[in-house]
Image (cartoon, rainbow, N blue to C red; front, side, top):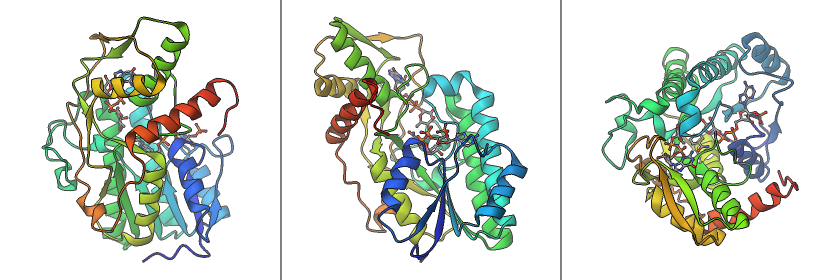
Length: 315
Ligand SMILES: NC(=O)C1=CN([C@@H]2O[C@H](COP(=O)(O)OP(=O)(O)OC[C@H]3O[C@@H](n4cnc5c(N)ncnc54)[C@H](OP(=O)(O)O)[C@@H]3O)[C@@H](O)[C@H]2O)C=CC1
Ligand SMILES: C[C@H]1O[C@H](OP(=O)(O)OP(=O)(O)OC[C@H]2O[C@@H](n3cnc4c(=O)[nH]c(N)nc43)[C@H](O)[C@@H]2O)[C@@H](O)[C@@H](O)C1=O
């Protein structure tokens, strides 16, 4: 058990969607949250990362900083997704060990698993088959992070762990049409189509792929539980264990937003993995279950997006 009370916890990536959710969640614990923004510390620079850790001396680190994006960003910017994420992971792990930080939680992703893994995907599926082509760059960097956690434990006895979240959504998400994930993209498309009075909106791909969606507040809650209680070599999946097709998701978002037009398909855009529903039994065995139902979570995120789009920027 890692006792949070009185500890200094560095949230790397605290301004992102998951980092912001972690800020809210850790505010309920008796720990001290440590942050540094990207202008002050670029995590791709090893000596700067080490200097920051020497000076800030956290007791624990949650690595929620990464180059993150949807299927199109992953497929078209392979260097950013491979190199930035390798650098962020290697720099933080190396500096943490050098500065004697003994507790570290690294965030991977469900896309680390083989493209055709049997469903639901258990943690044991890691490295048992070829990756999905669109996000292989990001996946390789995330797998390196998972292996670094295991390697530092094996060689130096460090208490470093990793978690693999499913597709996440919520406030502070990226709503940029080109680089976002599907859920924020659909919220924006449906909202703008409604406002313009369009007769249709356009989905990327066939709409047949299935995805699992977890609210970022639920993810943060699971991460804090793992930080406190997981001290094992093996990674842990974080999700709901339930999935939905992209077409069904689009219909749900349109219903919540109030857009009644048609749904068209851009078949020049990739489908990506056919499915990636996670087996969450390892996390459930710790007593954890998600609290936010998908419809409620989307409705709350839509309200956040309306305020964001109107320039209120609620972050
Ligand atoms: N979103 C999702 O669906 C999923 C996310 N994950 C993982 O969860 C974690 C958090 O993702 P999410 O919150 O969605 O991502 P965001 O893009 O919302 O946040 C990423 C954060 O990382 C920071 N960052 C990126 N590059 C650098 C850098 N070179 N130096 C310093 N800071 C940097 C960003 O800083 P700034 O704000 O200044 O840009 C931002 O605060 C990531 O590890 C991601 O891989 C895993 C599964 C699914
Ligand atoms: C979290 C995970 O996220 C990424 O993987 P992904 O799940 O494939 O990403 P996605 O959310 O962008 O798409 C999900 C599905 O939805 C379809 N789709 C329809 N219409 C839009 C659309 O308008 N935008 C987007 N982005 N997708 C759309 C899209 O074609 C695909 O079939 C990884 O690269 C990696 O970064 C990772 O870890």
